[in-house]
Length: 438
Image (cartoon, rainbow, N blue to C red):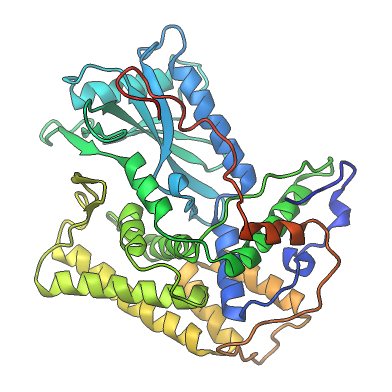
């Protein structure tokens, strides 16, 4: 954990977090991919902001006069935040997060009633804090914050006698009476537990990656203002598999940003990536190449059979993760073509290429903003800038710079070989009257 004195000011830190990072060996390509992920992931600052907003909403919908007063059993995250794979939805500062609101409603409640109750409970009366920020969706209620963070709250009802937190969720298109409403079985909590148990953490790589995260977090706090910078809890260690999921999701977002229609669900990408054997790669770019190859093969096999890919929750077969995408072979083929191009570009990065070519590829894969920032920091850190030429990036071999004195970050990086806990929160709380303690 980084120890920062109470009198630390902005001026104490350099502009580039790379120039202050503890320098250890990491291949240049892996370093750049790692830094792109750091720039697009949910920072510790935004993590704690999200936790606070979850807890505030939970109290708000249980307020006197709320249609859900006394009916909130449990609140917990689902999707990317539950598995530590949240990334910016667009640019580098807009995040779409997901939470479950487990409610003590009658099992026969209609999908429209369940969604409407949650919508009105959050929206409140005219003039209340969330009144203009709340949107009713087909399966959730979204709160849109001015800083670009969106939180989707999905109402659920616990299914008694089923595995932990298996629930009903609801599908109802507001204002579309011709579209059928549905009650669906889901277990996002079970999926998150399954995912987190799959990939083991590669301690050497995680130590290097953690050191860069900690330094970046320190820089973010330092840049915020000139007030004293508080100490930060270290984020949880990530496996190369989890980082690969984040980078693949970012790549998908960039490809689909200009398109109309649904994009491949994040949970489908996470499930297919987690199915791969863990700890059989020597770095991040190699992991990305292997995972992209697997995804292309899986989709190609389904497409060759003229069948839509079908992926289910591994802990709940009735929870079909591909129920809304793909809906046609054309949609599936678009993503398959994207995967073919992805494999080719990743192989180029892995084989070694000029820095200018690498930057062009990474912009295509992960977007211009984070790529430009990362390459600018990289050029500063190695003391050179590409001017009218290019710098060759070797296939292997680390970038080694003399170590600096320990400043707390090195110790935090080394600690990753042991146990680094996830920041404390109340997401998993206690089970309501419909089941055992969670």
